[in-house]
Image 1 (cartoon, rainbow, N blue to C red):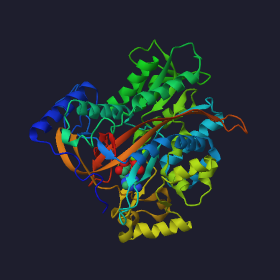
Image 2: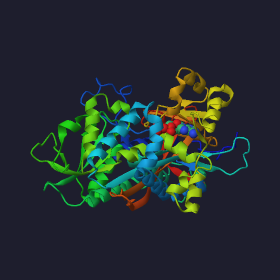
Image 3: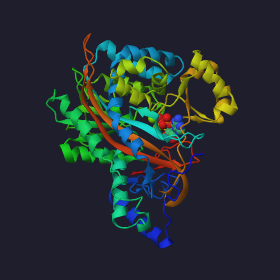
Image 4: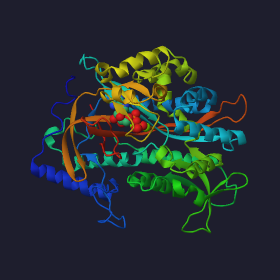
Length: 513
Ligand code: ADP
Ligand code: MG
Ligand code: MG
């Protein structure tokens, strides 16, 4: 195993020091909305029947050391990743060739594709698309050779509902505050100091992305006031993360936004005859708004579509004139299958979308080995690896799903595949596990302090606004392309999953080393 990145990290605290740090951390978190709604297992509905309680979001007590070169590379290539995924979303034929392999075996992907086709038959009325992306990475250390440099490897690329941009800004400010009030022992100042801490501006930068789409939409078609619509799940425990974006959007740009629970879409929206999307607030039905931008924080999981009505709702939103964040093709571009196809060695795909060779090679360097489970040569080889318990322990098996909790890890892969008809295997991809160097930190979750080995996952946000190109020969163009801050999620090293909302991880900030 590689040596720890920082053997004496985090610094030991006396019980008085820990109490001082914790009391400041807890109060700062609530005072600044670094918070979540409590899990029912933590505060029952009986204890809080009117849902007024919030609790501190799971956070690390200390920022986590993160290799500076890896951090800087992740941020530097985000614009290339934005360009890549915007280009994929604009290339319907290429997307179709990949999605087609999934349609017969993945109902959710099939439904999304059919929804796109339904809108296409009628003709899209909105040429603009917005992406609020997040590219996730881990630092990889070669377990056999600890002297090889640490490299940044991509876990996945999120094109829909990329979360924690709101809380991430807050946690980096919190760690900075704890440093400023001497909550970290002075003996650790060579490691924890203001120069090494990295502030994430994700909340304001993502809100700027929404504002850019809102402005690009242009004048009201209906004469009604304009708004942005956050399409959300209900209930939502991670609501303050979303609220931070909403508040930043209003404070910086004066843009009005509303939260629409996805299941209420058919009740609370209408399409005008020219497919302008109208939102009718249930609390004030006489004051209707025209929607410039639909921001999906729901709709990425089959669980969001319990009835056929939800598919009708998605179709209504997609047919509308509002700019979608993301469009359905952009949503599909986020399939793990796309990531696998891009990562295929010597494939022509990357250069198709990233013509600049230098840019393409930096993106390529972040790909970890990913294999299909189909009848191709690589697929047949991967099937051998996945079904052999000795080799499967180095892999993770992923379906085309988002939101955490869907993957199959290591020794569980062979038995899982055994129970699945082989015709369905191509719905999954097989990915090599990224192995970060050992690191320790302390997490506060549900009032409990947990100390031990941790694994960090860096997310880099990107904002991209583009024109799809509406006529033959018009391939569209990128109007805005920005890196938009970062997220560090840290989980216990015994947990395979890292989702903060799913209950496995904590929000953290980077201490560059
Ligand atoms: P989702 O879209 O559901 O978030 P991910 O691909 O991000 O799916 O996988 C969920 C989690 O599983 C990640 O946050 C990470 O902790 C872990 N994981 C996924 N792929 C890898 C990998 N190749 N190596 C190590 N851990 C991984
Ligand atoms: Mg994801
Ligand atoms: Mg993920």
